[in-house]
Every structure is written in C-alpha cells, then in structure tokens.
Amino acid sequence: MSSKPKVIIDPSFRQMDEVFSPADQARLHDMVEVIWGKDDEMPMSDFMDALPTAEAIVSADWRYGDVLDQATNLKAIFAISGAFPLDLDYAYCHQNFIRVLSVAPAFARQVAEMSLGMALAASRDIATGDRAMRDGSETYLHEGNIGTFMLFDQPVGIIGYGNIARVLHQLLKPFNVTVSAYDPWLGDRYLEQQGVIPADLETIMSTSKMIFVLAAPSKENEAMLSRHYLEMIQKNAVLILASRAHVVDFDVMTELVLDGRFKVATDVFPTEPLADDHPIRQADNAVLSAHRAGSVKEGLWEIGEMVLDDLEVVLKGIPPRRLQNAEPELSRRYATNRAKTPDESDE
Image (cartoon, rainbow, N blue to C red):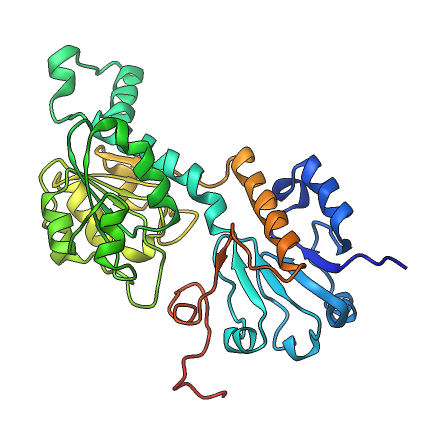
C-alpha cells in the first residue's frame, strides 16, 4: 500500500492533459497517490469511497453536495475552473482549516496579454482595417486613421486591481500611461504603493481614454457599470471587457457602441455562445473575441504548475503562496458561489 498522501484529481470539465504538462503529470504521481485522475467525471460512489482518506481534492466544480463532514483528513480543495466553486460550504471549510484555493492567478498573464492586444486593436482600428482590406473598402494613410489614437501617454483606468490588473499594469509601463484604479476591496494606500492613482468610478469613466474592466464578479457589482457610468465615457475612448460581462449593463453598452459613443473590445458576453442575432455583432467599432483570453495551451499549464507548487506545501502544513485563497471576509461576496450569508437559514 502506498505511503504517499492520497489526493482526489477530478478535473472534468477540464482534462488532465489540458491542466498538467507531461512533466507536471510525472511530478504529480511522484508526489501523491492519485485517486481517479481521469478526464471523465469521477463517479459519486468512487468519490465517497476516497473522501475519508483524501488530503486534498483537485476539481473544476463542487458537485458533491454536503459531504465535507466525511472528509476527516482534508487539508485543501483546489478549484481549477478559474473561479471559486459553487455550492461549497465555505464556513465549514474555514472552521475546519480546509483551504479553498482558486487557480485564478494562473489566468493573469494570458488574459492581461489579450487585454492589451484587444485595446490596441480597438484604439488603432486594426480589426476594422482588416475587414476593409478584405472587402476592398480600405482608406490609406491619414484618412485610414480618422478616429484612431495611440496608447502612448494616455490616461488609463482599471476597474478591479486584482491578478490580471497587476500583470497588465506591467505590460502598460512602456507606453508611459497614467494609470488610475478603482477597487473597493483595496485601500488607497495599497493602490498608491502599486504605482496607480486611486480613483472613484466617475473619475475613471469620465477621464480615461482606455478603461479596462477586470473586476471579479461579486454580489455587489452586477451591472455596476450602468447607463449612468457608461454615458460618461469620452467620445471615441475604448472600454475593454475581459473579466466577466456580469459587471456591465451589456445591453446599454451595446446601444451606446452602436450609436458611436465609444469603442469596445470584449472577450466575454452575458450568454455564451453569443446569440447569432445579438446586435453587438453589427458594431463596426467593436472588437469581439469568443472568450479566448484564458485558454492558451501554455497558460493553462500554469494551472497545473501552480496547483502542484501549492499542493506540495499544503501537504506539509505550510500556507500556499501561488493560488488565491478564499478569505472568510470575501468568500460569501463572490457572485461565482452560493455560500450562505450569516442571516440565511439552512432551508
């Protein structure tokens, strides 16, 4: 019988080869006794058999119900979807010292890179110019640049200064931009120490030439960027939506973009796949991407790398350093889970 720690690896909807590089799969098996470790969903009966001795669970979603009282050896739950899992009893985890870790930081580099690319594509009308060349309607030199602008030296606003924003900020530095940030979960002094100017939403929306929406979806920020704020955006400025459509009133945003009020670049939509007849598809001043920012092969392998780095230390009783920990103060506030608030009953 193996003396290695037992770890349940149930990655579906993801696949083993998608998450773990060949080298990291070898490292995984050297480190622990893998229970399941297949692409298909782990049968519930097998999961329950393995749960009492498992020291960690790696899964995309929490689909197992209220069974944590049987997880007597459990030290950590690794959520590899990119968000904190739905329907997990976070209070029980906190009370019983079970870490809940999200691989969200593994998406930061690839989403930040794509955000910068979409911003440049929108500000310089790269996609529009490509379409014009293909249908023979292109205009050259100055006439082909009417309405475009350079990123260099522009005022930039960031909404949500988290994992993605911190990487994006580094990518923006060569452009000599002035960066303002709005994040109600961070203090002004912290933001200043990161080299950004703390600002309220009105300032971000009305003064920024480029606005990056990178906030994690919470129960407090649904459609936070309402008509009131969207109508503050400068003529011909660019709104880049790369976190979740949850944060923006997407219908109003679409209306204003179609009216030519500002440009938009978005990788996310309220419903995916996007309906064939959605009006945003007809907006010439929109750069559209089918939720591709965080699905690059090398980037996805960062999931496995980070999971193994933190799994190694968690099994030794050492705090994890690479993944995002579900903090007790915030776990109930994410829109991506259904954790009960203190005033909710158990019904």
